[in-house]
Image (cartoon, rainbow, N blue to C red; front, side, top):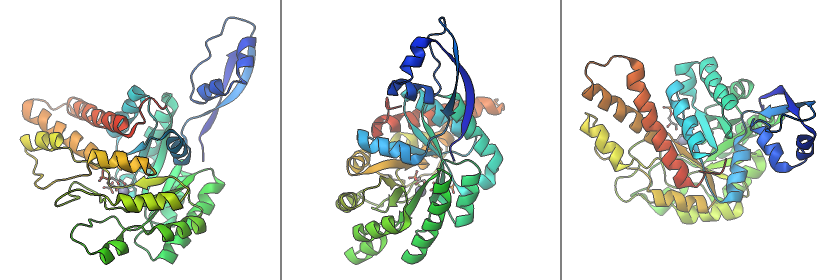
Length: 354
Ligand code: G3H
Ligand code: 13P
Ligand code: ZN
């Protein structure tokens, strides 16, 4: 459900006229104050939308030909990193929370931090459940104020995946919350036969049936990415021909999980300060840009943020052995995470689109 609150705004007659201007309405929606406060006063009540849905962000992204970064957050520092990045880049952003983060941080703590961010900044943000494992989890998140939920039935049979996704859609849509579901399995496809790949990756025709029968808003596809820092053994290659076909057949915006690039410079920094990351490899940045051109509107990033954060924690602890104030350790780590997020926003083309 959208989070709304009512505020009294003071407008002069000129501003009331401007209210009929679509751009001004957008401005008000994101909470920027009226500048004409010196003339004839009128009191007006308007609703400020604080968090928006993934659907809204992704439909806009498709229209504008860019992608929206969906960044995994776990705590205050990661939320601040992404929100500061979005503000500095004037970019929309999706803050996503997994069930294991809900267990770690507590539903109330983590959702309050994200909702507070939505109240404070003038860029569109969504709060999304990432990899909701079952109906109950998804429903709990809808009720807790998430603006978007993922039901991940990719491990179920096709029929079971349809059934659970449809149930979540019925509940979530009634409350204005958008739904992402996944078809296919995120797994490395190197050294696999064509038959094996077909069994793992998203089939374009089946995707059409899945979208029609579930009524989902956005579809996560499997085209050769996987989660974590070890995605490929040799050349990192996505099945972009398959993505093109899916995009031609399916009209809703598409999602790419497992999109971290595992940049060499972050791995080198982490390794310099003691990490072991032999064989780490991610998705090449130009492949992500091609995927955006072929229908991907949401690009999921977790691993690169974690790597940047922990590499900096290692650096600070190594270089400042007398430091024990958590803020002096986590602050620079948050800033490193923010710089990575800003780089993704520029890469995906969402900078300046808020
Ligand atoms: O796909 C999601 C994350 O990268 C893994 O998340 O460790 O919070 O469950 P988690
Ligand atoms: P990475 O592990 O590539 O960052 O993927 C994150 C993800 O897909 C979260 O849902
Ligand atoms: Zn994922």
